[in-house]
Image: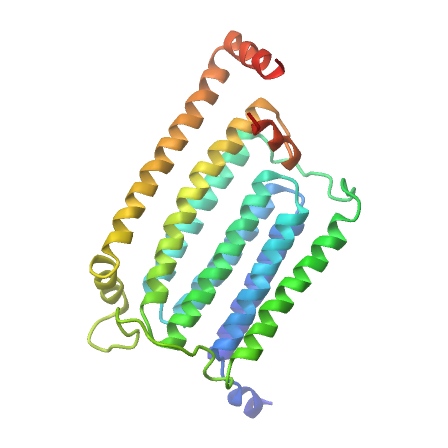
Length: 194
Length: 108
């Protein structure tokens, strides 16, 4: 059963990832990304990460991909691009060679360091908590860890989110001023040319 | 056939190999594609590969810390998408149909 779930989810993940890379239309790429994200969420459930599976679907598939689609529609780049011509000679073979080297290094490291197939990870466990502790469910365990041991990191992420919001507002404001007033837009272009 | 399948256990190694494969597909896409939006999606693929690896190690080591860090990666990914898409929108309005080459206009 576990094997069947893994094989189906892995097939969906890899097919979606290849779809992101090879589809000429950005909308198709975004929809392939949704397939990959759902496959990852299934594997999260298979590995007892129930809260993360829910967050994966809500944040990634629900917010980030929708944001991508908004931007694609807003900018009107939902046309297929020409993928047959290779603008930079030898770029694609070089990229594939680099990718094969990358996965090669990862796999060699993996198979050199693991002792037997059932136990890959070796090392000390952190003091935060055990995953298989039967006294709490996954969500409470994650919440306890976040609001006790990782509280400082959690607070820092709020600063990060504020920075992201300010960045989005600043970038969007400049763009909307350019869009709103044709005079200002031409002035901006002139500045760029100078 | 069914006996062979029943003997096959899905170990951590399988998840780690899948994570490495997904990361590589994302990296190749980032190197090959020229549309900034699709390059961004490839970065999301790579982040997801890392998340899958973290969750696998969390289960292998029986440690909740691996799942906590995935939570933080999700927050960072959300912030990164907000700022990155803002830059792409500003860029595309200046130059419709911009590719990765046109990002050089960001130079001061």
